[in-house]
Length: 152
Image (cartoon, rainbow, N blue to C red):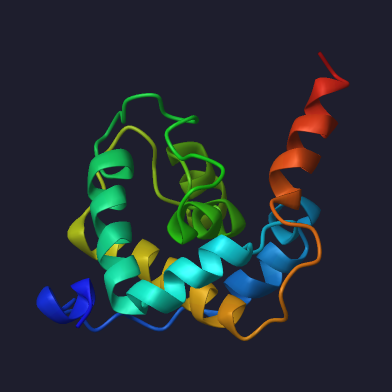
């Protein structure tokens, strides 16, 4: 029995518009993100339902407020499959939500918007599970830090 069995996610997540994936595919930065071995193991052990329950909580606490605490830095780079998915899908902060998903900053997210974000994350995780394991674990974090360290 898993956590997802104890607290089932009783939501029908909407379909994600295929044009979103096409737009994200054109971003070299977003394409760097993939689940590493430990993220994959965690997802397999807990199951997608439980991981999405965690995601719903992260969204409600870290993204849904009109002005989230530490906005722009509230989503860690690693440590949970949802965090990686958020960076890969532009659902990591209110600026990215505005740029990629057209959710206005400064307004709290509606329930429907939160469900949409969860659907985007869930779809990305399902797609990622089907991909072969990345050769270099956590490459997106290292590449991102290297890229911007030069500009400092």
